[in-house]
Image 1 (cartoon, one colour):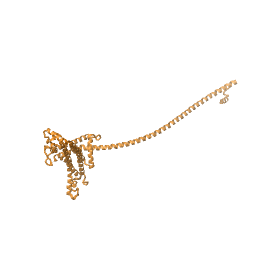
Image 2: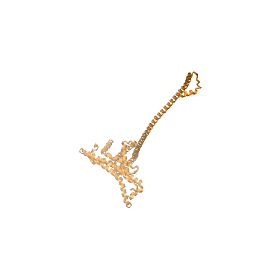
Image 3: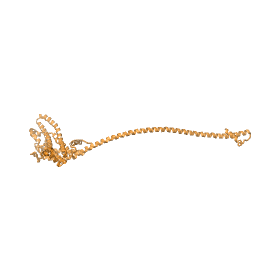
Image 4: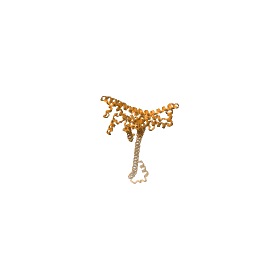
Length: 156
Length: 282
């Protein structure tokens, strides 16, 4: 139970130990703890932000899907309308074409008939002249009876 | 009980006195209460070894410090640092950067030195005596006192450094004039100046003295009680009593050891917190 020179030794050990602990233990660990605290806080904030963003993104996705559905329905109805229209147009066109073809054929037929009639007329007049000459026994000049023949032809 | 102590048990007074002797340089004994010609090797070496263990552990941890994956010793030291830092922040917000390291050094080092009390009272003395007898010394004249805090040198080394820091922080924060004014006008105002000087001086000096004596007294008494319990080994029939009492006192001491380390640390923080207040806040 005495105070001796050991006191000085202990003072030196103590002082050096404080200095060493400050440099090697206290400051690195306090810094690490601060760093960790900050990082945890940052991480939590980031995750919160991420959650919010995800929520927003989901909201937007839902909106987009809704909008897309509306657009699709519109497109489908438009397509249907166009389809009916096209069928109608095709029908009309076909009918028109058929009419045109029919009209052409009819015209041709009429033309043929007329031509046949014409040729018939000339033949009939020839026959009439030939018949008359036979009956009368002399040659009948077609030019003299031109008007009578013309009436005849008109009657055919 | 080892054989080397068997004769000592035969005379209890000698046994206890033997255990309370320090190993000294030159084998001298201190003559006065304060005798700076004597140096206690055992106290110094044990405390130096314990300080080295703490320093080495700190160094190893800080070398591989990892904020993301704390492992093993880093967890332990982080817990201690956080605990001490919490105390410092609670008592003394805005503490100087040296307060924390000072506090943790006191806490851990004192804890380690106090914990030497848990070693069986004869273990280290017998070991040192045995080693000394190999080199031709008489083991009965080799002394070894294992617990550094049962020595006034250790506790007062701690207390004096704290005292020095109290004065330093007082002057730093109050100014020399401000610090002197505390002595002159505190606690009774300027009309009782002589009384104030005496009162404040006693108050200031009582801080390191109480710090040093409290730790010394607690640890010395604990060690002495362990020695007394060890004396019960005088007969085989007393063994159960020795075991029971040793266990009980050991359990109680497990409370005392960290508590004294904690109290020393806490009072240091409180004193330095008071010292760091400005003049007006005093």
